[in-house]
Image (cartoon, rainbow, N blue to C red):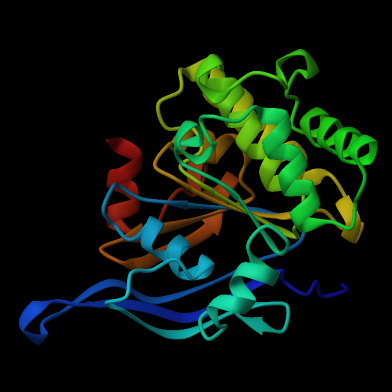
Length: 267
């Protein structure tokens, strides 16, 4: 069988926060996992277990008192040692598309969805010219199932589901090989959770520019959403990944191995 090179390969990722008085607080310890093209890995666990800290480490968005160790290879680039210039110009948007936890807060409130998409297209692609930018923005909206007749609306005029689709459209503009979805279904009703999860899965299966599909790292505490679209699940507890399993085996038979994972399913 042909081996597939992972889009993201994380080895020994640890994050410590230096607190007043010299005390160090461990938030993530020795995280190890890969995400392949065309694969969704769901990172699950209760609030405060370190999931979002791990995501911030991958994006280079940790506060100044954070210390990192290990590696997180996106292709040949180690995200943990890359400088801010590289992260801002090369990684965010172009190599990693972020689907944020609070899309309404992620969108600029005084600008229409269309203008934000056009600005993002201009920043992340070689597209130039008013007509070309308009067409590219509309194409990005269509890929995220965002209705064209809502493009000239402002974020406060959108429902929670449409705000999520607008944020997803922005994440897709750069045709990034890795999508990072940080609690993308928080605050949504069950029907909208399912639709949002299905749309994320569709973007994973879309070949995109690579022809192999995108990788999706979905950070969530919604076990139903993870079961619905993930290929594998990684369970995080107290800053450590305590179990990594195929979704069908984890939610079905033989079920989770770690006591915390079993408790998570029974909660």
